[in-house]
Length: 462
Ligand code: ADP
Image 1 (tube, rainbow, N blue to C red):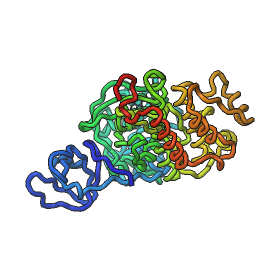
Image 2 (image 1 turned 135 degrees about the vertical axis):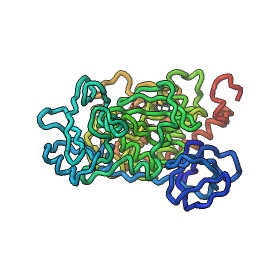
Image 3 (image 1 turned 180 degrees about the vertical axis):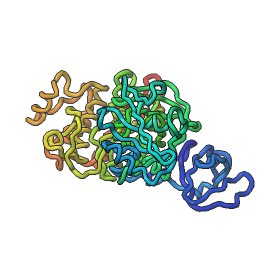
Image 4 (image 1 turned 30 degrees about the vertical axis):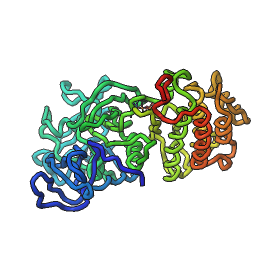
């Protein structure tokens, strides 16, 4: 198993009970979720904070274990109280037996696009129309919300203009509350421990901010739209399974006005921008090979777990402070089941069989890896320069392959070419690619006499 980094902010799980703590120690029960506050106070011990009680104290490091991964489950829902298009009388039936504060949300049948919040109070069910106006939701034209999650969060804490605070969700049959599952497994983080900083990126679905979570520098992806947030739950679930030095690590999620995905901060941004902004005069080919090797190792780990990334490209590789490259963006990552799917595909990176027959596999990731190698050795150029997507599709199918980037070591170009074999089974595994890259790195280091990672910058004296 990959080594666990027990940094401050890491969530862990108590292995057993500790009911009679000595002075300075923490009391806990088996399965309690604890947050590491400090790892340096006493040898073999951590200072931890109890996630439920908020108490802090010492714990022996042998008495905690890693969090469990979440199981991929289509019934896992950020909005288990959302019942879709059901009628008012149906909602009343579902809210029986009456209990003050029991609630659900349904889609309005009479006013398509609007919602209805149904709440049980004093033995009756009150229906509040939720109006969708200017991209926001409101019940009373005074309080506005980004989405339903935001609205339910507000009325769970404040009565506002409704008859009672929302106390208990009436869960839709078959759904599982994501909040409960995330919390039970230790992946739910507490917003009060987070300090948000500057905006550092724009994703397709939301902004990325840098921040600090209990002393650790983090990146926070915020997703405000509730439908998108639900889709991102998949990415998050996959990330709970992954622990590798070359995969961007998930610290946990925060549910507040939507979904916030908290990961380790990769201070040097994405690999395309990294290479474009520095260029040949700053980054030498040994460092390029190290990036290639880093990604290959991360992908080898995914391969060993039978996970297919489906969107491997330099824009989805991020660079850490120490210039280690890590694969990110597991939004499309799926188990290697080769099932069809209807998503927009990144044509220039996708293998022919995946484009034509939606046959995704580790071997289609290997094809994308070949394109990524091309991006690395061309210092972040757009692949298939000057060709339209239609042209790329047709010509690649007909056997066309990109030429080697300028000054690309021949050994690296031949790796690209074997990644682009038409027949998936003739492409190498990531395991094999790694061996070949290591050989290449050895040869190049001997040529240039370069050894250390931090010595990649010209004039750095390495
Ligand atoms: P997309 O939605 O396009 O896949 P992301 O939302 O994952 O992209 O990220 C958008 C940008 O935000 C990235 O290109 C990168 O520059 C920045 N970014 C994302 N995650 C991190 C991180 N963990 N550390 C530093 N920067 C990040």
